[in-house]
Length: 272
Ligand SMILES: [Zn+2]
Image (tube, rainbow, N blue to C red; front, side, top):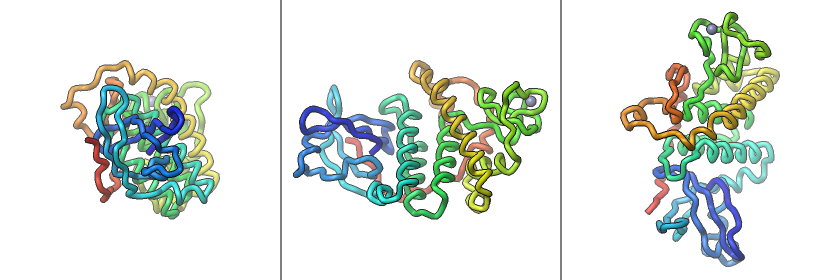
């Protein structure tokens, strides 16, 4: 469950990221009554097994069973709660087309929430890993090991609008100059190298978070909006490891964008 909105006196519109059908909005009747048969199952963060009745307008939630109540665990830990909230918001923004399958984004949200709840890593690192991998899935992985513009070995400059690290000759004015360890941390988070990420120093985490947030923000403002109007790619192209929904070329090397996909031994979200 990503989000809920009020609908009339007792109902809600719920926004769900599903395993098979991407982001779906549906109406849940009577969910705000105290004796609702859905209880707290249709709250943000909850991983639910859901049945929907498809209608011409909004689909209707007919059944919901909790698989993992991540919200309960996050609610008692503010830093993890805010990180989780940012994940859900980002997942919604990165799935702009309703009912467009988004399996990798779904697995990333499930894996990210589980990692947050397990508490084994700094929530800020978990969130930054989520951001970087979400961007990679959307076709916006930052170039970190080669110049984003010419592909040569990078210097020490990070230029958001250029797409990541750039070399000395491509470096536009006003680029950031992150520490080498900060760039190393971003690479580790993108790859899922937690040993390296957990060993990072606080100042590099702070710098990493700043760059990742600015990079994400830039793409949400400049990139995602345009996704709504682009034609879908041919199926052959989307079987690729990296989906670029914009139809523009992807300059990143897929190897740098492929974190090990988290296994999710969980039941399907059923959309009927
Ligand atoms: Zn260059």
